[in-house]
Length: 109
Length: 348
Image (cartoon, rainbow over all chains, first blue to last red):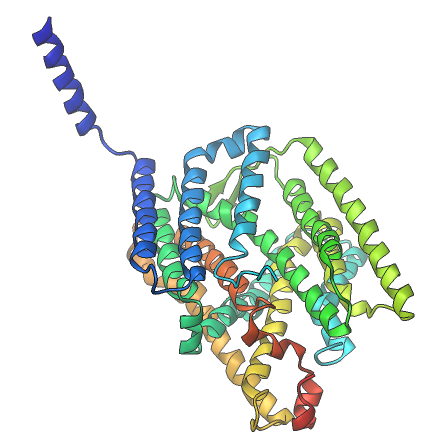
């Protein structure tokens, strides 16, 4: 039984590795790569660029993540009225956030 | 209050669109005929395309602008290129969402511009916008965008340059709730206007209200007319080009020692106009044409490029024309006839 179980696990793991990447997964991989890149850029530029630039890089990561979620769950936008309200609301919040893209922050005074 | 005079400013920032709507009503024309499509296409070439180019011209014309906004100028185009490449790579999976993002963002962006232009004229007139005045105005304007978005969802899916976009099934209460919010915002904003007139013992310059009335015409009363709605991007672009032109004149001729005359204004206008016309052609005709080798229909490639260029524009626009950003402040307070006539009194 142990041998059979080990063989089966090996077969499963091989099939998981061999599983082809779907177009959507391919895009998500690209998006994750971009988000890592923005994080790395922000870290590498620490102390050398303004806070505004760091925030802008973070916003690019937010935009990439937001668009990826739209690609992943966007089908719901066209299928469910409640999901449509939630997704369009989230998009408007994203647009509102992006309005502050690389703009001067208001001073507290 | 006006940059040139009441007639020119009033027409460009909204009067023309309101007039066009009245003409459409009188003619009873609402369908999109082949002749009308031709007119829209010509206007798109001469107004819409240059308006996108004007943003890039403003951002990339000076090296210091690039360093003032490095993420917008350098990192953002790379990200947009990645989105466009992804959509070209998977036109059935990614492209519909890129276009959906652009189609929802577009009227939101128009609304943001309406608020911005209203603020510019209010500032020139001395009408101060406090937190609540701004909230009422923003609620009024952005609710028109939501109403139009909900109202204009077709029953079936639609096509955008060969890319299938299904309709969004909004619940009926969204339109009711947004219309209620808009009505309250109209009442509150009018109360602020009346209060201002009463306290200052004078009428509020009507030019301040023109962009808001135009927005209401675009998205509420004019939205059911298919042809009129097709022209809304042109009206938005016209507003944009006007303000961009003012800024270009201010930046080029507003400095000490610059030659100030109608002739120099004409020369700057001509150079700026030609650059933006060519820039628009490069963005929307040359760029999709360059991608002829991609194994995707040219129409779909064009749709994807349009979405990418538009989303890039929404960002650049938000960055460049921020009123609180010092370099763009002073040109928005100039007066063109003064600039042409009296060098010392050019800036207010």
